[in-house]
Length: 83
Image 1 (cartoon, helix red, strand yellow):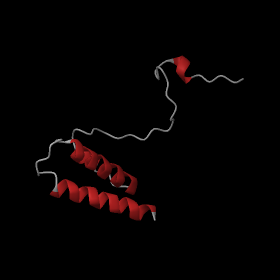
Image 2: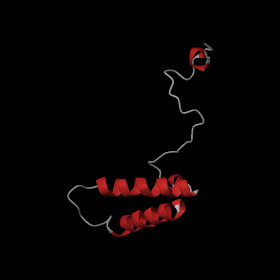
Image 3: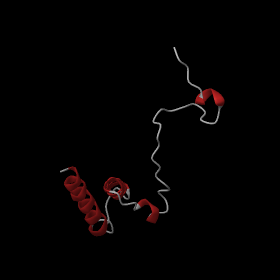
Image 4: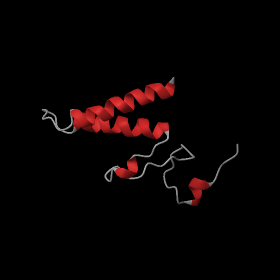
């Protein structure tokens, strides 16, 4: 069911980019940017890396550790404290 919803959003946002993208609108690039973000995120969730074809998006990396550190290169950030 999740894949079906992802495919629906990917197809809908892709068609929106192809059809409505070239048409003039009062807020340029905002709706196209949202549609592009939805398309890229849905396709990456489905297992397709389309961000490599879009040069201004850069590389999307998955991180193993989701905690944020102040300075990842320092020894203090890598040490753990047992209490």
